[in-house]
Image (cartoon, rainbow, N blue to C red; front, side, top):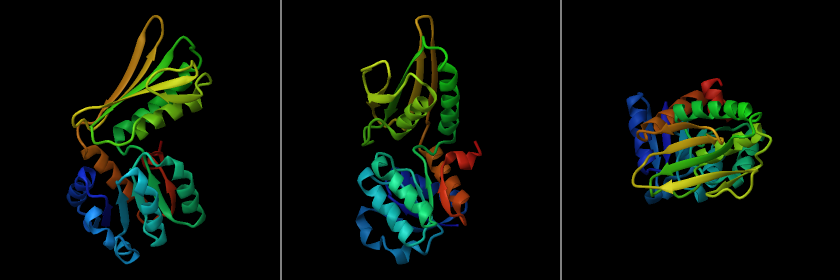
Length: 238
């Protein structure tokens, strides 16, 4: 498969390495130094583009892929105010778009556990819930897209929670999310439930960026030849 990489930071380099290990060809790499090459003619040379850039450029990058009929996998977070617009455009115009706030297989298993646990805890009102996420100091958005996904899934499955709040708890209906930026940490997410009598924690710790890159490549392989909008649940058949 011919892969295009949009964004050639640490994640982009890891994706390139993993793609070559899986016997794909990296036909196009777009970074800040060669933006002039980010054109339809070049995008048409690849089977799938994988986008890991910045929140302020993700939407326009995705739309550019749509314009060239290039399937796109996106892992950029922090741009969700435009997400529904991109998703609806994809479906209406028969494009191909795969989005995940986190491509780690392990974290997506955690998402499933999180939703199920929220359904169980919905009937045990003595338990309160909070989320903590730790990432490297170069990560721009806070809370992380992964933590927001976890919080929104709890809200969808627990009657007493109506919103998430950054850092401290403001109201009993809030889910507090604590964000820590530290060293070169790839990503640690902790889900915490606590009652007056006990505490329950579920933690996922990424050891490196390799897991994210592998998940993005699995997503690219999954959508090759397909049209429509997809998420990790489609890939993992959850």
